[in-house]
Image 1 (cartoon, protein in one colour):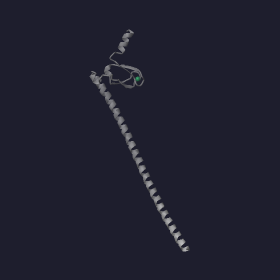
Image 2 (cartoon, rainbow, N blue to C red; image 1 turned 135 degrees about the horizontal axis):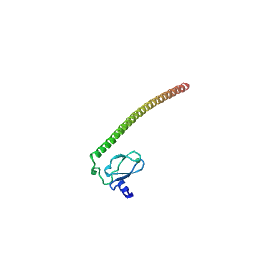
Image 3 (cartoon, helix red, strand yellow; image 1 turned 135 degrees about the vertical axis):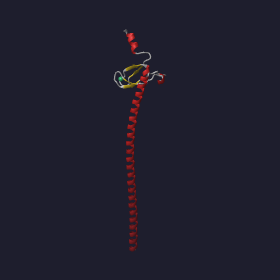
Image 4 (tube, helix red, strand yellow; image 1 turned 120 degrees about the vertical axis):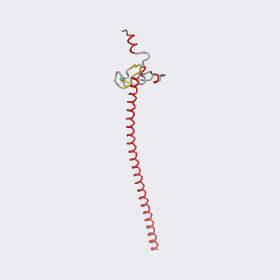
Length: 146
Ligand SMILES: [Zn+2]
């Protein structure tokens, strides 16, 4: 086997060549693998094979087995998306109940602010009544002196 034939058997013109996003290893896969999620030969992480520009996934004449793999991959993505949604929903519920607590605390603060204002008004009223009473006493005292 010469070096040339080795190379041509390794990477064909129709192969999709891309870098693993996890370990940057250069990967080559048959064009029919476009859109599939496959484990990286180097690091073992699952990577999605890019679909070459101008190529439609429907153009790929895949076998029943390949389509089954694609369906399985889609199901896996769907179930992980579903668990992510469930997780986000839980977070949302927690945030909503936190918001409710904050709203309650705010209402309580507004309530105590209102009663402070009412008490201050009562004190002010009391003071002005006392001032009136003192003035009345002073007036009557000065009248008696005259
Ligand atoms: Zn890798």
